[in-house]
Length: 246
Image (tube, rainbow, N blue to C red; front, side, top):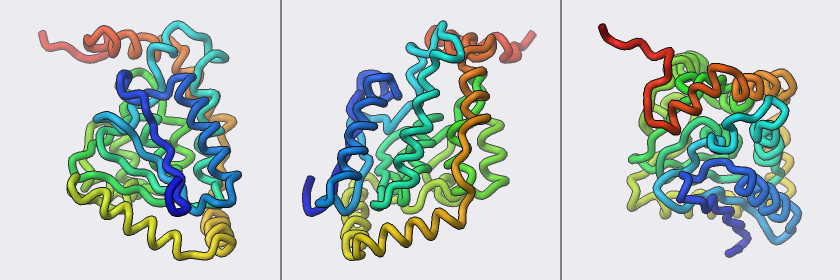
């Protein structure tokens, strides 16, 4: 920790910072500790490697039943970020996909490199962006989220900012300076006033309700389309529902 800032770093670059059981547990522990530490004024969610977060670990999702899917643990992480009384800043230096989009959207301020890319890739894997919709939809312009969730296409940081997912975009070499400026501004606020202001802001938004959303996500992860999509991704081939030319 430095000057009241606790930096939590997604540090599993070998698997594109996928949300494996290990990474979920580490992030949950680090976040819980940071929120309980009175010396922490602001929390930063950063990452090592080229990719911010590629979403759930698909290797762990292969073959499991709906009750065994790691996505079932994801709402707790999103809720911790969303309801944190301390401001949370996400730093997106590289690609964010699926669950990674949810992590960013649950934060208070999202700063992205201009070279970062984003995608709601779920539908292309036979999955549904159900759980992350609880934090993404309050942030994004509805018609933009509608198109991007249905197409699953990759979009750039400028589009993410225009759609409301990202707050600030900076060139990669200027990203740390922009983040530092936000941290200085946030730390200038009184802790209790910040916590109450965040509570006030969140009270104007829908409460996070994950019950039906979680069941939907888990069912598709374990379902026929989801398992085929996961297999096709891991085998680097088109899923069987992708049309082929004659």
